[in-house]
Image (cartoon, rainbow, N blue to C red; front, top):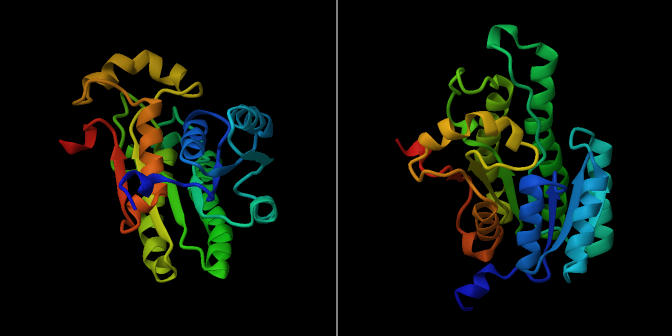
Length: 259
């Protein structure tokens, strides 16, 4: 096997939650470029259909479903449909997420805090459990990749952003990744996470715009993240090149957390 062959995902199938826009869209395109079949799912099926159509027009192989990752029945339907269509699930990218910011911790509505944790952490568990059962049942030495955030590594400056629910949920995702990795290592399943810094997307660019200069000033590499940063990272983590890595987090933040 040559070095470049380590990154070949031909014949493998990846489920990407939140695959209809932003990071999910970019990662789906990257996994397709590496040869994988992709299954796109999110609460907004129309967005996933748009990405599916573009991937298929460019010679890839993608299907799309609606899926609320907090709904066990909808998650199971996606897993079953993927198995029926492709016969295997080799890669899971837990990317679906939400946030509810703007509140000081003493004022944060409890129901909003619970909603963020339910999507970002509980939803990651539900999807991982459903996919993991299939991987174990079929003897698949799969890859589970959780999209966390640098926000899960530290608190946020309240003068820049208030997001205690988001930060807490992403911190939980990082510990969940470690625990699941240890549990499923005996099955040959690796579980890792990516913790991106700020990467402008259609969804986040309006939030970032007013504080963009302040953000960049805090980044040693003097820029925000870009689509290609996520594309390269996700292909590596899904590939044979990362076969000996599990329970780890790749921090993709331009050096912000290095200091």
